Every structure is written in structure tokens, then in C-alpha cells.
Length: 348
Image 1: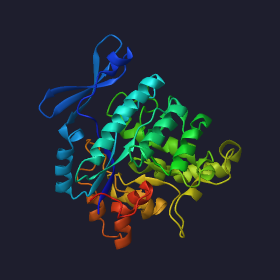
Image 2: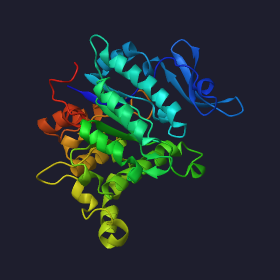
Image 3: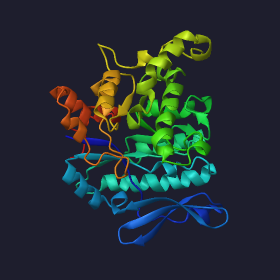
Image 4: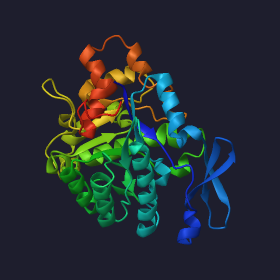
């Protein structure tokens, strides 16, 4: 079994949310050739700003299954493209878009012979609406949880306003996959693809530190969180972060007495939270597995985008040091435990 926890999907078409809402900023698809479309963000002057070129494997389940067969992936876990979070928008409009995206993912997961599990999206700028949609995702749509961003309009994930969302996720047993978006310091990252290469890892580390130092994991001991891109820059900086917690408890230990490293793996147990395996570097993956334990490192490819792993799990396969149990955890077991499933529950 090979479960790819980190994949993105969109509907092939959806109505213009600019026309529907009466204001700009929304992403729309411009289909310009068979199997090809541009994601474009509407601007206040009526123009569109190019965001990304995508192919049919971003919306066509049949194309995805062909790729899965080619690469040996048993199951994909579907989530929206993070630019669609739309936390900047009016809450009711973002809720409507979330519902459309979530209904689409649920439809793909329900298709006969399904090979997919799903994570929804929720309008975090309004926690009450977010909780309502989270409940619908889990109870009505049979999604395994939700994907959220690393911050909500510059509010970090430890903000008190978001606590009801994490409470609901804990109560529902819903998995929460945290993906960076709207990266910090955009004015300094205008060249060299730096938002994706530097901004995303930094965003993820910032979100993880906010969670680890907030007491959130102690307040909700059954809450399951997974951070994309192998935890971003945290694995390389955990020593500095943990040292700082001890050196300046007046600044770092205001909400928990548990040092950040104590939430990571120990000899007798894996880490308290999950990450995916997407590092593109064997040495980095070794470090991540050492820090989190194989039971908390889930296969993730970022399919179908260019910063992803072309053959999900190929680097894991090529590393001889994993035991049979570690390999099983990395390829499927960690994803199953994060999603709250057993091996018998996964589609195949």
C-alpha cells in the first residue's frame, strides 16, 4: 500500500466568483487548449493576473489514476490548491466557495472504484462558519478532515479566535493538514521563485512553533495535525528553537512548560504531530524520520505540481536503511494513523 497524503485537485470549471460576489481577487480557470488551463486571479481593474498553468491531471480523476498506476500509488488524499483558501474574502463568499470545492472532492472520492480520500477547506476568517463547514465535511461528505493555511490574515494558528476550530476538529476526530500559503515578506521575495523555495519552509516552521509553544497540543490531546513539506525549516532549526525556549522562558514559555523538542519523537514513542515526507534530499529525510519517527512521516508528493516528487516514494524506496516496518509506516501507515483509518478502511 502506498498512500500519497499531499495531492491537490480542482474542479474542471466553476462559476466566476468575481461576478457572483461583486469584487475581485478570486481565482478563475482559463481553458486555452485541450487539457490545459491557466489559473488567473481577477484584479480590481478587470484584468487577470496569471498564477499557474495546470494540466488535466489537476481536475480529471482518470488522468490521476493513470499516473497512480504508472507510479504505484494506491491511494491519493485530495485537497484543494492553497490559493483557493480565500481567507481574505468576505466570510459568506468564502464559505460558498469552500462548499463548492468540498462537494467536488467528495464527489471524486465517492466515484465507483474510488482510489481517493479527501480533505476539505473551511473559511477560517470566520471560525463559526469554519466549524459549521468542518462538521459538514466530516459528517455529511465523509471527508477525513480539512486542509488549512499556516496563518489567517496574519493571525498565527495559536490565536484564541481559532481555538473553536481546533476544538471541533478534536471532537470530530478530524485530521488537520496544514499547508503554507500567503508567505511572509513578499516584498523581499520577488525573484528566483523565493516564495516557494524559502517562504514556504519558513511559513511552515513559524506555524509549527506557534502550535508547539501555545499549549494547543496539551489542550487538545487527541488533535491530529500534519504539516506539509516535512515541517519546512523546523527540522534544521529545532536545536535553536528548543535552546531559545530554555534560554528565554519569559518570552517562549508563557503558554506551556513543555519544551518544543519534547513534542518530537523519543525512544519510547513517535512525535505528537505528523509531517509529510517531501524533502527532495535523503539526508533531510533521515533527519525528519529521526525527529518525528517513521510513524509520523507520511508519504507526500505535492502532486501534480513541479515542486513535487515525480514518483511518490521513490526516494524512500532507494534508501536501504529503513526496516520493513519503517518502510510500511512511511509509505502508508503514518498517513492512515493521521487520517484516523486502519489499513482495511483505505480505498484500493
